[in-house]
Length: 187
View 1: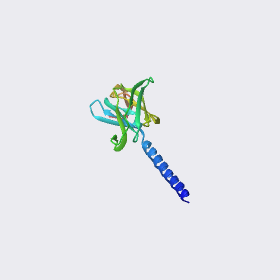
View 2 (view 1 turned 135 degrees about the vertical axis):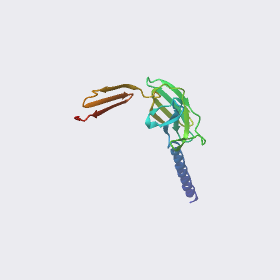
View 3 (view 1 turned 90 degrees about the horizontal axis):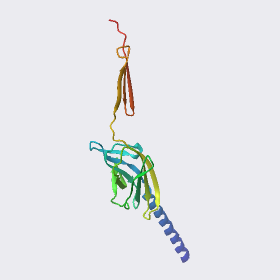
View 4 (view 1 turned 135 degrees about the horizontal axis):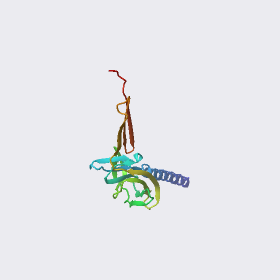
């Protein structure tokens, strides 16, 4: 009877330990993601964009915010449109003081500053590693850095003075056509 109790107690202890261990593992990776991008625009004003927005117009101090949970390492790789790695960095282990705020939310993780990147499209890969260096999770996002202000490509006015006036403005990724119909008024 006494031996049977010891076996039951060991099973309960093992079960509790396994549940606690499982919950601990889940909590470490529960919020892992590429959160977003931040930096300063050409007027030295802070700008932020969540990773799902894809576009960032940061001209200086471009950084990528990655959430991992605790006891994780981040290996960040940025690849250009020619499939060439232009930036790679591996962080230290994320600890209890490694917190950042992004869009009014708090995260455990790191904000990693990049070297200067020219305008263009990039693939951002964040590999989340355990303390032994094994890949636990991988996140990939597309980022487009665009610091060039819009440029008006052409302005034209056609058929002016007739019954229909047409004004066309074409800008970078924007086309606007306004039409104004004149009333036929007799004098």
